[in-house]
Image 1 (cartoon, rainbow, N blue to C red):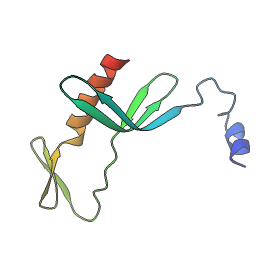
Image 2: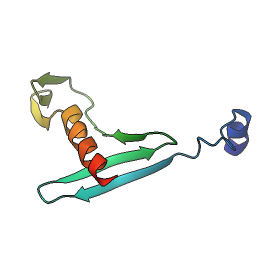
Image 3: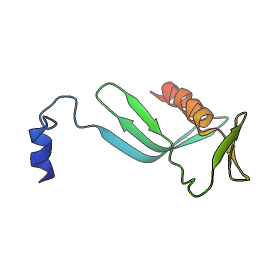
Length: 92
């Protein structure tokens, strides 16, 4: 079973587990709002995961704008996630 496998690797009973994951988290501030695809809280970190479905065409960047093929996909997910990080810092 998965439980037995985790025990054999030392993951169960280890104080660094369990991690917690939260999907579709939304924070609203006076001037902006931030939607988080996935936030993972570990024993020592908070990880923000930005999910994208950008298959089947090359992804390129021009400055802070990303493109999938010729389609403008908006601001860089790196920049967007960085902004969300600062928003989350204020909330925590």
